[in-house]
Image (cartoon, rainbow, N blue to C red; front, side, top):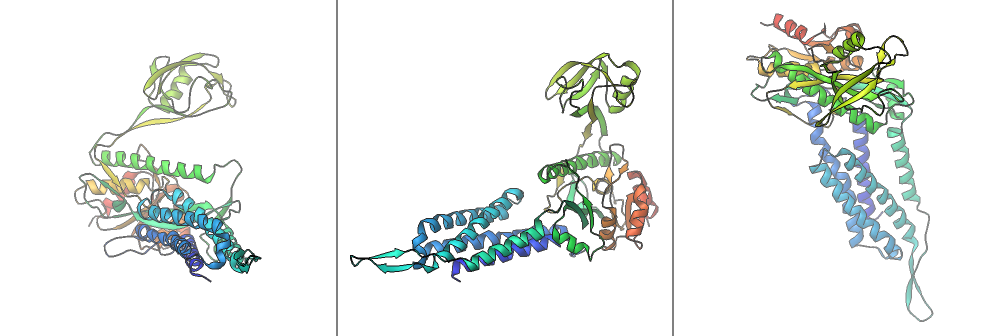
Amino acid sequence: MHKPVRYYIVGLFIAFCYLIAAELVWLPGPLTTRSGLQWIEMIDYLFYGLSLVPLSWAAGALLGIGRLREKERALKYALLPVRCMIALLGLSGAYAVLLETGRLVWILTTIAAAAVLVFMDMLLSESAAGGGAAANDQGGSKIRLRLRLPVKGGSVLLLTVALLAFFLYPTGYRVTYPGMTLNMNRYAHAEGGGSGGEVNGVLVFERPAAAADWLLGMWLPWYEFEKIQEGEPPLSESYTQVVAMKNDANGIAASVAMNKAGVGGGVTADGVRIVAIVKDSPAEQRLQAGDVIVKLNGQAVKSVEELAAYMERSVKPGDTVAVTVRRGEEVEVAEVPAAASAESPGRPVFGISVQDELHLDIPRAMDYKRLMAHIGGPSHGAMLTLAIIDQLTPGGVTYGLKVAGTGTIEADGSIGLIGGIRQKAYAVNRTGADVFFVPAALEQEARKAAPKLNVVPVETIDDVLKWLAQRKS
């Protein structure tokens, strides 16, 4: 095996080590340093080691360019461009891993493209190993191309494809398994706030299941599987949605927390946002998804509740309503006929899905730490709210307790339901938390998953604050 191929094999070995580590990344979850650095934060530093994969390939390609073997010269016009591209992609991938960690999709795409070329190089160079020199009739010499079957390179390729299928190929099911805890006081910081105590949110992993997940699920009862239904959004779209939900949760948490701490006006409704329009409905071609309804027939509406009340009180099926909307920077008025609801013929509808357009009063600047393993979702909202209150309250509100919890945070301070409660209870139980706050409806399920854990059911952030205040020493 010549040196460039050795470098390629080293890079592949490191890549598969990272692939296996990604599958089992939750195992060291309770690990925390004396300074409070948690395992979920350490992952960011370990990620930099992934740069060794494209760097190994780039080194092998550059070595192959500089030391083209005699037997490879018959294919030099194929090998040289391939090796140049491997070197370019390898160096670009390493640069992105080290300095552009936020561009994960681009990083993985670059490494995957380099991997394809690495296998092409391995197959071509092994095929050309039978080439040699032969005398011609005029006494000169020429390279005679004699290709041979690339058995070694082909074997490595087949093994790689098999391993990738085992770890990555989707089986049509979704898997949920334990994640890690994250101290919200380390994740976010409010301007002018203190460092706060330990307030842990808890994350779980949920993604399309591969064969490796089913194998692990045979031994680990915390792995749960469910069939992916037809019509569900693709992974890329789901990723965008969960990132958006995390950002929304951050904003609501900050606004609610600051209001509780006596800073700012909290969350208020500022109209009704249209999130979807039913096909062939009265609103189609008249209203748009993203419009914010602010008036009906000149009557101001601030929330979905006010909109529904006006429609029930003042509109009948068949009436035409002047709907005033904010569309970007403009204000538009559309004449929209009201149709009869299919479920209740006497009820007027436009054929739209709506939600409150919220105004978030966040007078203090917020700084959020970006973490590789904290992709998105809203389930950290309640504990983030608690952490910000903790920072902005002199002396804090945790009173030395190791607090953990889960649940969304709503505009009125209520704590909403989340998924993966079994896996979250297991993850928290491993950390030795003094208390685990959960949405009240999930109390029994959490207790079954971790019988020794101090599970406390709550419905609002005020319930959390009251329970902690009662434990003040």
